[in-house]
Length: 189
Image (cartoon, rainbow, N blue to C red; front, side, top):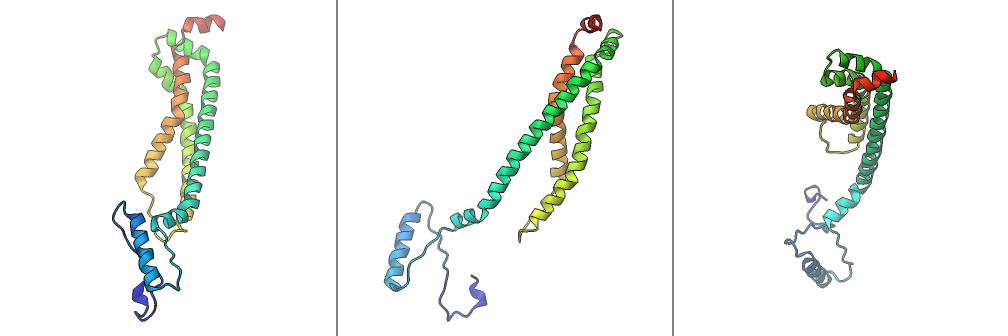
């Protein structure tokens, strides 16, 4: 309650007291004794501000935990899907990769060739998901009186992290396909 809005002739409804660190128990006992001495007819009601703030923010904390777990599940499933697609693509391109390797193609070039399509998929997913996430985040932030803006570097870093997270399992599959001996592949084809 802001005391500047009201006359000083009314009773103070709330009082904020900050005890020394580690002295909360003795300070509460002193406040209760003083209160009971000055106003024995009124009950003493005390509340720790940090606990009240925590109770106010608990629904948001639960929401953030749920979003974090859901996001982790989505990222893991997306990486598994990308790795599966890359595995199938590498199997379909095994003969072409083996022929390129026989004619002197390097492993790095073969991995880059295999990763190109997966990078496009991750980029398209990021391009579609980022505006939707920003719209949702702005709507959620509107419910707060004080809010922070979304920095550009956060969007850029999230794009780089999503590209790394998406291409890491795919690159393992691509590296394995590019490093396999071309003789074995051509013999079976």
